[in-house]
Length: 379
Image (tube, rainbow, N blue to C red):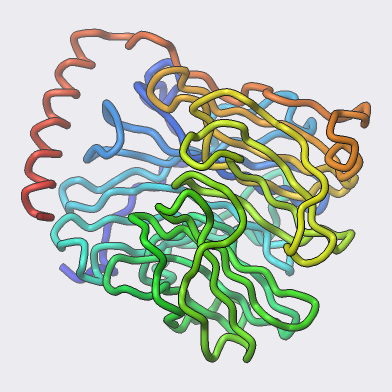
């Protein structure tokens, strides 16, 4: 079987088996906002824990600025009979107003150092504000594991930092035709890390600044001064951070927004920071959630100037997908000053105890055996 031939079951009418009351864990959320303000959020779950052979991605929406959320609009299932796991969803609204739903596929027939092991797939909705949401057919986009929003450069090129484990250099894919075709590229040598989730911003001096998750108690960084032709090797940045996903994006005001865990080792103190000098300093910050563990922030800019963000809280304990809405004035003030801002709203919360203890034990035993075989293959 060719790696393009997975029989993905995108379920547009998910039944009660996918309801939050039947989830044993959930996490790694993502969010996007349409031109008219509709919000979409997604995350993944399935099985007794992560990883598991029957994981799935779920998508929900909100038409009231995140106050309430729909039941699942769709589910992207795994294909265990083909050894293909559907993990880690990523939403993104492109410059044409199209909504992209990316997800990662792990093909367990291949070891981690093989390029076939990790692939990024996508479906696209051209009219995400419409009453009826219509999606394209699934297609393979690029090698690697996408866990951050793509970046659009001033010259129109799209950079998609889908990482892999095939070498010692950062890797990404690039499109010059609005996502129709993608070319694989390599960057500088990686700073020590197990998961090199990365995002890149274009600075006002035309340089490209890549930040990446690292195992060095800070974010790693790499630079390109020739439009991505060459990249410096990864080094330690001045941004303190644990080994966890973060979010960075240029705001409409031209300030840079960073949301990350402001701790060298713990997934705690989720914080939003602003830089007015392209990341050289971060004079403004707002503590979003001091709890632990909170992780994997993602954010979208709303038409009214708001910043809507999501993250997870205790994937296997509290099992919460949380959200907040802030604005630039809140971050500058270091506290909520906008009447429409809020923190720690629950999008989804799975039960503390399994709904069916006997079924949970059966699935847990199955997943334990599967994981042991998976580890043995990937030694």
